[in-house]
Length: 594
Image (cartoon, rainbow, N blue to C red; front, top):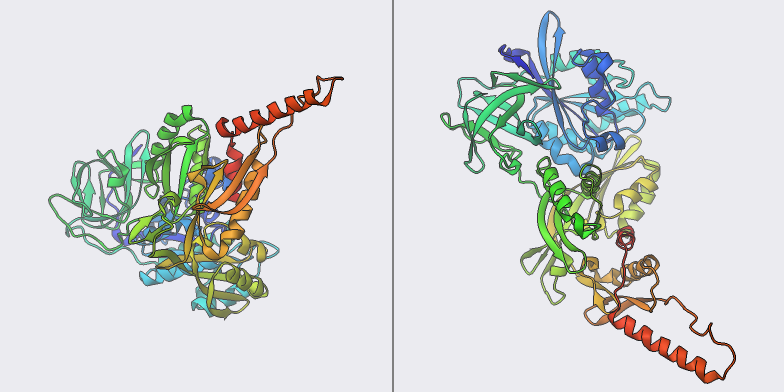
């Protein structure tokens, strides 16, 4: 840890983020900025330097924002450039939102081979809403498939930039990166705020560090935060003691205080990461500053029940889940118990990608095998929030489901296929707007139609060029029903699902057929059924393993053989009523595919 006690000149601070659609080159650009500013020596450089999580590096995506301070000499002065690298996937859009509240400007990165996509526009619109200076940069200009002029035209026509504002870079080779740094210094304003005013610091992230405990990342708006201060969280009035302050470069660098305009971290004596609510404002006990705007309560959209593959591993899973929760304030966890699978957890996620990332981390970092029940969303049933199908009552009269307002950006040649998918998923097209070679499709759709395979279908239909963004709009009345899955008369609550009445037969048939393929044969016949109450919607039988009990016979009359076959028949009937059916993990995973 480096100790730095020099006071930063506020006029030489630039706080900015890199915003873009997923896979447009944000992390690669962050690497080049670290190199060009000599923040990281070339011999210590590695790809995706700010993506510290192994899954981020393996998937090639950013799933958690990362702040870093870079010092850069320009025209005879030294500047402090505070960069916050952001994710691009729609599931982590809130990471981008809270980052932009901590900045005065943003670099809008657009892939020269893909052009403007959904998160490009969503992030740009929010940055403009906050009054940030946005610097457009076309990336990957070195690639043979780059469509620089076409993308430039779309930026001018659809987002209203002047051609003279657009920069052309290759984050991979470093071409144009020095010009981008110059533009950041010249065009992004230094932070405002005064040291003499009551302390106000915006929390844009927090995490658990094994050596330091809870680390809170802040942007100081007014006043200062220093070691030994008693701080107060404006959201709930809770207090804590500041044990250390500093910034990341990108390693932890300690200093005496963080003053107005600076971005950095504080270490406190709090033990629960949920106390440091992202978007909250920190002030000091003596200053009693007011809360800043930007606080939004995180709300999960997708829910999963997760269980260890072996009940003996539950304590390992419990430890892994709560360790992960320490670093992910958006993860909602509550204990759950299944009669079939034993103890587990009911978890809320920001989206399906978020849930996949968490399950991967539990297995890789926690060293525990896990499987999950099918994902569900929130419904409002008779005025109550329901997130689990087993709590859904088919006798209910007032049922509401969430709807989304969606945007799809796609090259115009794929428009027909995209509209067909929207229609099949019960979506309603609201508008189609042309931006040069790109088309923006606006539509509304039930969230239940989105969370499973909608994104994959859109990508497949457009050869990977279309992009999708959405926001929850409202809850609307829906004609829904709960379908239960039974195996030999025993209902398995974890496999129950909620579906529109118009799709009951289709969904039920697919799930029953998939389960019948996945459940291994036993010594007796197994019946797999989908039912609503006592009414059977779909049914499949898994034939019994056959054992030839008459093989040992030779000679004699027919009655000896008939007696053995009759005894076997009675034995199988008895096994069917009292025998345990082994349903493997793969059977439940097969339902997820459906």
